Length: 290
Ligand code: C2E
Ligand code: MG
Ligand code: MG
Ligand code: MG
Image (cartoon, rainbow, N blue to C red):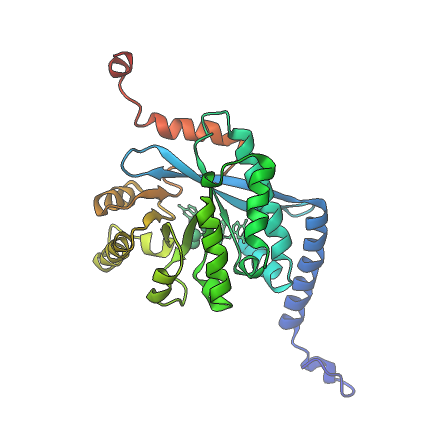
C-alpha cells in the first residue's frame, strides 16, 4: 500500500513493487522510442529437414539493440510491449523487415527458403491483418509461399471465428501457418482441428532431456502421431544434442531447429551458416563429378 496516511506510513510502501513498476514504465517509455527509431534487429535461425539434412526454412527472431544496454532478448520486452499495446507496431516492423530480407535473398542460395515470423495473438485481432501481410509480400515482390507465420495457442482466446477467417485468407494465398510452442498453452485439442494449420512446432520443454526420459519420449511420440493424423508437418524446437536429433529423426519428426545446428545469427552471417549445415550432407566428390 503506497498510501501516505500520516507520519511514517510511507514505510508501508512496497519497495519491490515500486521498483518493478518503475522499471516497467521505463521500459515502456524506451520501447516507444525504440519503435520510432527502429532500434530492433532480426536474427535468423535455420530449420533443418530431417530426411535430407538440408536447411528448409529459417525463423526470424527479434532483438532490441538498446542504445545503452546493448542487445536485449525478446523475453525482456515482448510481454511489456504486449501489455502496453505496442506489440502490433513492433510486429509490423518485424513483418516488413523479414519480408524485405527474404526479397534480398531471392536471387541467392537462400532464395528458396521459407521465412517464419512470430506473430503475437493481438495482431490477429486486427481487422486488416491478412491484407497487411499480403500487401507487404506484394510490396517486396516475395511469393506468399515463402512466408510462414508462427502463432501460439493463445490466438484462440478471443474472436475465434474472425481469427480463423484471417488465417484462412492467408493460407488460401499460400502463406503457411505454424502453431508455436505446442503443448504449453491451454488450448484444447479441438482447436487443432478448427484452425487452418500447416505446421506444429513442438516446444523445447518436450525436447529437453529427450534421450534420457522414457515418458518425455512417449509424449513427443504422441505429439508426432497427432500431427501426422492431422496432416501437419512437425518442427522440434530447441534441439541441442546429437542424441536429441537422432531420436527425433527416428521418431519421424519433419524438421529440427536448435543450437545443435546453429544459434540465431544476423542476416549477413546466415548464408555461411546455411552452407556449412548443408555441406554436412553434401555428396562425396566422386558422386558430384558423375
Ligand atoms: P519462439 O518463437 O519459440 O522461438 C524459439 C526461441 O528458442 C528463441 O528464443 C531461440 O533463440 C531459442 N532457441 C532456439 N534454439 C534453441 C536451443 O537449442 N536451446 C535453447 N535454449 N534455446 C533455443 P528468443 O529468440 O529469445 O525468442 C524467445 C521468444 O520471443 C520466441 O519464442 C517468441 O515467442 C518471441 N519472439 C521472438 N521474436 C519475436 C517477434 O518478432 N515477434 C513476437 N511477437 N514474438 C517474438
Ligand atoms: Mg517461434
Ligand atoms: Mg517456439
Ligand atoms: Mg518455444
